[in-house]
Amino acid sequence: MKVSTKGRYALRLMVDLGIHSEDGKYVSLKDVSARQHISIKYLEQIVTPLHRAGLVRSVRGAQGGYRLSRAPEKYTAGEILRAIEGSFAPIACLESEVNECEMYNHCPTVGFWEGMYRVISDYVDSVTLKRLIDEHIVSEQGGCVEK
Image (cartoon, rainbow, N blue to C red):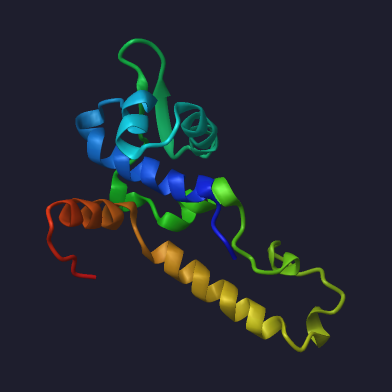
């Protein structure tokens, strides 16, 4: 499994919004672009599915921009990445709720793939946006982060 540039940048965008949209303030993509060194055009491609998934709110106009739709501790890295990347299933037959693969009950490796999927999902769903924000703030200050 490989996370795309869009997925990586989506996490950076969400961390940036979490830091800079205190008190419900909207943040322009121009400001995010300058801080994160990501083009505005690319950020627009990333923010659209995040908005569609209800992870960010937007307002148009001079004071417009984007902000988180809820508190950072209410997000997981997993849900942010899934909004951009889709499923983390390592093989196609694990992507749906009910496995319809004709070999499922006889497959000698399905347990391995299910275990891999579970480990990845458990990890990305255990990391909150708040944790990513806190780790970034501490690292910017030159400190250590307790995990």
